[in-house]
Length: 268
Image (cartoon, rainbow, N blue to C red; front, side):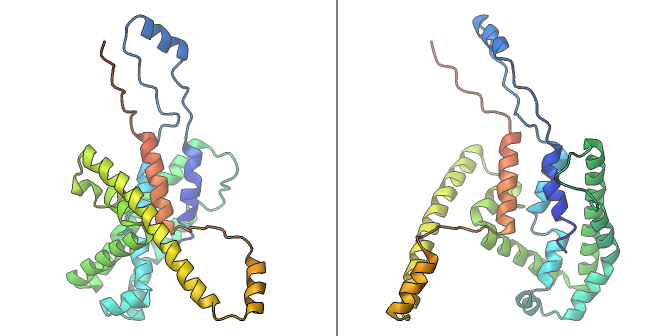
């Protein structure tokens, strides 16, 4: 089910258009005339279509994400559904799934792309995504009682928190606008989320090292020496889930799209 989504995210970068920065000479002349210098434009303004696409990627209630959840044994057990129930949902979405997969067929993401053509494909893809979301909602509403459908959405959000981190979900996720953070609260939570994440990663490394040492303690000295020769010096690697990567992209693009914060004018 992921195959028809990935090309869209890969090709989004091709839509970015560079904008010349504000000429330095004009800024200097404005300063000498005592005028307030104009704010520089972001190097790469973000088209609304890209922000919409990135928002869709971090939406835990997205149609295909809910469908994938229904294939997981633990979710099926929680909702008391069987393979036949999932089959009913999949059958209802076969047509729109197939048409979505065709939108970016034959597009080479490594070659220059006509902007208007890509924009048209993105528009078509978004319409199909909307159609798919409505079809999924209709199918699940028909198959599940309201409380089970609501529980499925709760599970989707909880899984996203586990995979992408609570900080990302609070600040940039589906509930962010409804939480109505003030600028000060947003900045405070963002700063603490980064701090807590670093602490969490440090603890995880300590726990992993402790239990790895216990496990390696079961090897003979000869086996231990052979193993250590094969792995060499320590190497830190922190893989991120697909949801976490989507949040990283969204946060980066959102920061680039935000207007620059004006600097305070010093008192004379």
